[in-house]
Length: 314
Image (cartoon, rainbow, N blue to C red; front, side, top):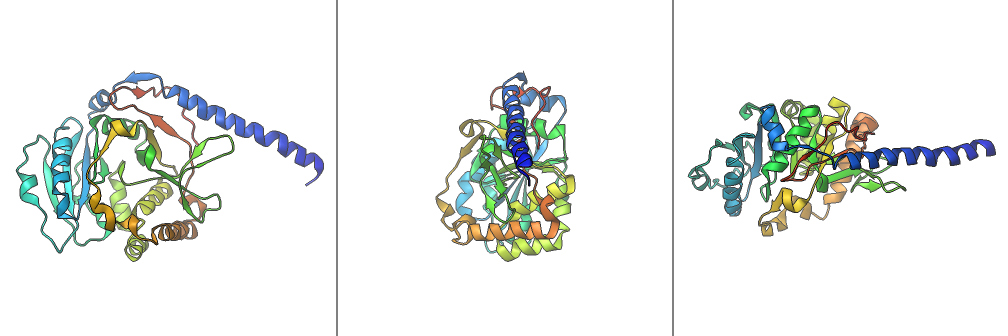
């Protein structure tokens, strides 16, 4: 390029970045404008969802009892709780769960195997349009679920997650990374994790019909979250959207000492996730992951940020 062209780039590019950051800042400012209770909004739209959590270790029975009592009291926003048992070698501690009296129906579903794909093999049990998957070592508040429902209802094609669970791909699309910040401090991401996410039930069958994805997840014993993120982005053309809020108020972490043998404890965990990321890029191109800085603010126990703001989307 000529010197003149270089000067244009050096002048114009920072301006473009500044404009992008301005809209991101405007989005954050708008996010503080209260509109109405997220739970009231969920009620007004008669929105309910299905809570799904996977069980494998009988030692976590105490966790499940608390989860069932927590979600089982949310009959205004939760239609049903599915306890997905994924350990064919052991009996689930079902009697202790079945004896808990709560307004929301609780159903035990025995998975066909211990495959991570089984999380999405539940469409025949879902009666609601949306599904929320949660880990069995977390308790998610009613306010956070209501907020996620309200945001999801604005565009039901999108995957809705939580801010602390944001992840992304590297600039050259060959690595799985934490959210990255541009030179002006804007935080970009293209994935959210299964710890707490909400999506349309139609994506369950879409996922289970993709044999290549099922094999990838089984071969790596990993990456079901990367896979669902990518498939939803490919199907919708949209990045996920994360909810911004205080983790301490929106989620409570339960006993986790049994996690020592968990998937993330595998020394090859990150290597496998890099491999999965590359697999999707090679198969679907860069459209497999769409980076965004779009977030919505919803402080559990307070109000949903005003939907009248123009949210920054990239």
